[in-house]
Image 1: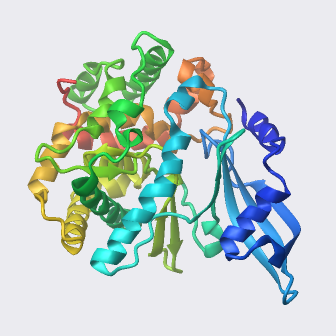
Image 2 (image 1 turned 90 degrees about the vertical axis):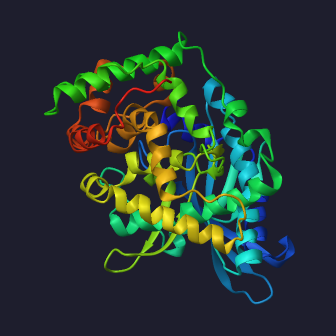
Length: 422
């Protein structure tokens, strides 16, 4: 389904009516329907082409008149609607998972920080409404109206911004570790082994994976990298890489388990910056792929996808060490009384699950570095029905190849490209 098709479907939804917008105002302003009147609703796409791949996302500004005072105020919100014809996306359960995260998990993590540590920690936007019939819709606070912004995915974040992400992930992971210690998995939706289907390796997605790998490897052979680097990549099994992403749902060898965000790339983050570009505040978005497992899954995913190419190589160890420092500090504040992983254990875990880095080259980095105006169609990506022209745009554009040229020698030197048993 193209962006235009999604938009037309969205605009024809019966749910999007006066009652829908009144509910948003009631929940945002904490007043009843008889206390206000909606004067006007402005609605516009919140993301550009190739900036969101699962949902349609709209920004709404609701002009409201408060009847007791005649004061006019605006209510700003984001509407996310999961409108897809792709069965595989339905099977992933992205909407039920995100709904559960907003209804039961994120607030509980923030409560843990308030009740145990005495600190106010906010992980994501406030949730204003949720609908599942006839279409799956989540309404959230519009963080842009509060001064937050999404940074350029084609460039990535700088060191200061990367550390802001690491601090929040550490706080999120620490709260998850405490909740896991107390309640276990909580719900099967958050157990990736159960909630995410394993697709047949000879099926459409398995074949698509092989097609993507071939296009990726074709670009690698044109880079100025060592024969050893090329040889190691040649030994990767593109079909087995379907299972590689599930390594992240395994706890650390020491048993430490966190709730991963699961999709922590730059488009799922919003920063509030000062005039010098330093981070004042930060929020995570899109909790539709969250799952219990090893924290290195989130670390690799973010580093692979969202940090400036030169920054993540030069400051790789510094970023990991900062995350560990924040994790230890956070677990201490939350009075976590089980084993706290050492920095050495964390680095060993990254080596143990190094295929997550390899998986990121083929499965996420091309999305972040994509520069073509040609629309990426999720249905075509899931079924492998992508033209050679588009494959070239995905894996041979200068922005993507530049990232590979920086990353591959670094990861090869670190041993992250060596084939594992998976």
